[in-house]
Length: 123
Length: 110
Picture 1 (cartoon, rainbow over the protein chains, first blue to last red):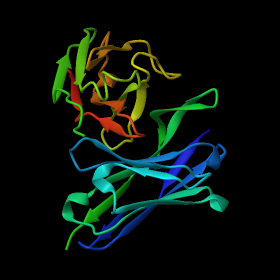
Picture 2 (cartoon, chains in turn blue, brown):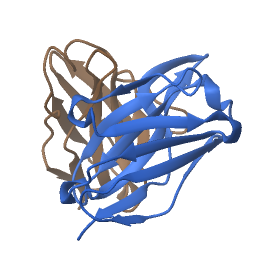
Picture 3 (cartoon, chains in turn blue, green):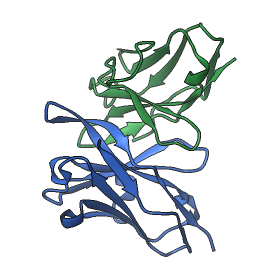
Picture 4 (tube, rainbow over the protein chains, first blue to last red):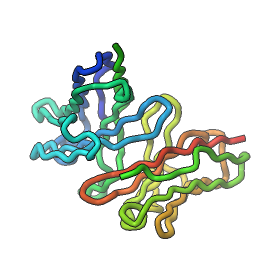
């Protein structure tokens, strides 16, 4: 059973950085990308970017370029998303998600998702 | 790139059908068949219910169906059940490894 388990809630001050982790199990961590999606309270989903755990290659949505960094530690099957220069508008639930794959081909759909990590930015 | 456009709300009585639209552009919905739909219940992570415009992941009932015409995709839920009450989000590949989501539609079962 594929499972993504994320780190716990965080409270940060404006201007600080936050690093959220996503531990994968039930499959070969380096075989598929990890994507990150966020959701502000009462708002829609917003795709942030992807990371290939095998190569470390990344791709970020234009909105987050320069502020987001996605990394991984393959020895513990864990992906990380770090967001810097936090502002109140970054208060949201952050999700990691694996691409939906059929016969070893992966597509730009997401399943499963982690349980989400609430990041609150407040002075 | 702007979010895809969905109606904020939709509703139907048990047993009825309801359709939710998702409008994009020729650079996303209209340009690729990589359209998907997600169901999200309160406090839970989204769940994939439709992929590649009209296909079902394992375990999703065929009461859910998807289609696309031009720059607009649609999700139809037939034989509405109380358990279908949730938020629904469309998503589309937008080229250059980018993905867009819609703003979401709250489905109410009356």
